[in-house]
Image (cartoon, rainbow, N blue to C red):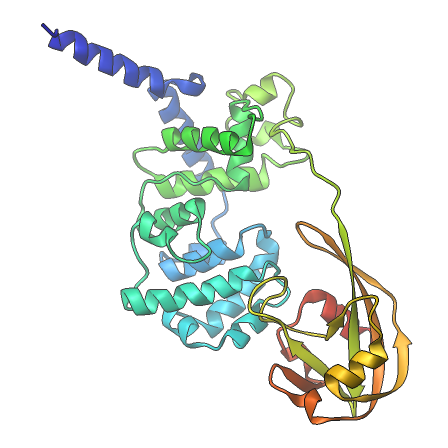
Length: 371
């Protein structure tokens, strides 16, 4: 016969054992959250433009822009973007070209394309009202688990753990989390810990506090440990391993690719080509490209139907991406005669005085500014 009392005690013990992973009791977890919340309210960031309201659209926009991008770089883009597209409906109704133009220079352009796609989904599927649940938010293009949790927490006060780069660094140091056999296992451990630490209340201050702590105190280099509210609990600090954690992944040397960009000029205008909708600089306008082994004069004649009078090689430009480095060799070409092929769809001649109004990749802007 099963002893009900013993079964209940065993289940309770199992839950308590699970909750004390990473050497924290329920009381310690509550204290951890209280320290973060108290620190955020006194020392955290409170004047960021997206903290002024709980508009889920504005919060979503800020969270996407902040992915792999520093706050100082995001703020002017965020303010311009929100002024031009004050609502999800306004963003959905805008042409992609205009969205990309306002995003130009912020990098990681798939974020802008996903924002535009997601805005149209919100309008079509939810009548323009941003979804409330984390699960529904996470189904939108370009929104992962952490971003969805942040939107739900800051817009609706939902209790979900978030785990951006700053939060990962704080948790890795406080709990001395070592690298796992695989990156997936490490992510799993961090998510498990983050979920256990979510407090019963004060989720907005707690979530913002963790991110603020990583962004302003628990820095990747030269951490300001004496200003940290968790310094007495930090296992990395106690063991003198702050600079070691989180353990850096071994990075492979980035391969280098080479390309040639043609700077075709005619009567004070420059030729731009629309790039494919996906891939590097997807949907942006750029200078025509060709492989290093191709002949610029032949390409000008056969591809664009133009006769070139003067060819001038300009200094090369190096540009870094996440997975490779790109070396660009610009060739300036003064065009003598145009052919209709140079004016086909997805191509346009733009006056040099107006060219920076187009959505251009950063290296292309550098080349054009050199003229």
